Amino acid sequence: MMNASVSIQNLDFAFGEGELQKQILFDVSLEIQAGEIVLLTGPSGSGKTTLLTLIGALRSAQSGSLSVLGHELAGATTEQLVAARRKIGYIFQAHNLLKFLTAQQNVEMSLELHPDLTKAERSRRAAEILDAVGLDDRKHYFPDSLSGGQKQRVAIARALAARPQLILADEPTAALDGKTGRTIVDMLKTLAKEQGCPILMVTHDNRVLDIADRIVHMEDGRLVRS
Amino acid sequence: MFGFISLAWLQLTHEKTRLLTALAGVAFACILMFLQFGFQDALFDSATLVERKMNADLVLISKKSEAFFAMKSFARRSLYQTLQHKEVAQVMPMYVGLGPWKNPWNGRTRSLLVMGFNPEVSVLDLPGIAENLDFLKQSDTVLFDRNSRAEFGDVPAALGKGTAVSAEVNQRRVDVKGLFTLGASFAADGTIVTSDLNFLRIFKDHRQEAIHVGIIKLQPGTNPLVIKNLLQREMPEDVRVLTQAEFVQFEKEYWETGTAIGFIFSLGVAMGFVVGMVIAYQILHSDVANHLAEYATLKAMGYTDRFLIGVVAQESFLLSAIGYVPGILISWGLYELTKQATFLPMEITFGRAALVLFLTFGMCLASGVLAMRKLRQADPADIF
Image (cartoon, rainbow over all chains, first blue to last red; front, top):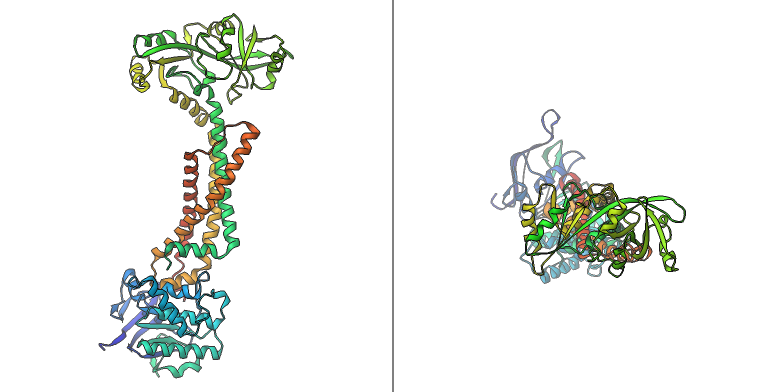
């Protein structure tokens, strides 16, 4: 309990107000310990992404308790949400790299948020992490001249560069072929284990289920242990 | 390694063709504004040339006067009354009126501006006045503006050939004894100057006591503003005391606000502003729209709205700053071209350069603010 990176108790979540209100999450409770890799599966529309965006401090929870890395996010202000986001590495289905920045510059964007790092440190750390994802010879390429798998590797490097205390991944392999997807997931696992960083990954991809310490299934807004 | 500026800079410069289009648009807006301001000022300059070349420290005019071509008269004794102050060195009455001039060659009549003043003193600092003043001491003599419109007859050519020219002004025969240089303006297509006495001969019904402009020369070293305030208190109700600068302003204001001219040019400037704003908005808006997912990702990483607003603001700042450079350079070229073609006094003054720069900033910033509304859609929770 003390070490839980994420602790969710009796979380409900609904979109809209009054008559039009549509409840998405029902009484969700979940804990993720430091260093743990948790996969979240379930059919489309079951509320997986909504849960992920709540944990990622991208929207604020209305009721129940949602504690992420020591921040209580239920009813949090925008400033509190922004502060929590800086401790989290987010990987999306699309790589969402800035086209006008090189791979190295894209990674540095996430380090810019940490003013304690000097310019040289930021640049060194970005280079290191790009080496670690196997892009040592592509650092100064723009995203348009990288393959899909390479772009997603840059996105992973960007998420990991700032040494986040939690990684959230929303179907990171969806846009990739099977082999590339596997490589990406293995790499993510290795790097996360090295840093002792827990991962919560939403996925439909049966080929990567084996990396999980635990798999959580979601149906109609409720968690079903499997 | 990169803060605000360079992020905005990298984003703007990543696509060269689009950047060039944007800069061409901003530069075009700059040029449009420069030209409108330039033409407007050139026309105002020519409209106020007489006032600016008047050899006066202070002038008296009637309160009812609106513009130089339609001066109302006031009592001459008000002007002479100012002589009791030791600071007033000299006073000179001036008469101004529009009178019909009959073209001596084809007999057609057209109205021109007639100015009359004491030929002992040169009250107008225009080329050709001082050296010809002596002619005006004879009766029924005038000097003719060589830049009057051709409809008045080719007086300069005739005089150049040594032919004597006489014409009828207000049905009185006068001899043209010389030429001076002023130029046609909004008010008058042509101008003649003559002596005060000749003016009264031409306009037979005008009383000598009713003058149109009272010119006051002060002792050297006197502050005109101090004497102005002093005189204003003693003047009768219907007389205004103006410094020369105020007299110029008085004339300019008439053309600026009393006629459509000011409106037309302001509209031109506004058009340039709007065109530039639309182009800058296109660029900035599509920049934001094309990067919504990336911006949302930056927000998910912990970047604030303020950071993104800052990037858009910097982009608009950069657009205006770099678009302004070709804008002012091309405008300068066009000013030179216009000067050669029309003899209008076109100059890029520091004030105007600063004003257009300011407007360009405002234009890009306004479109930046409009584009920022799109940023709200870059919400990571809605996009993913």
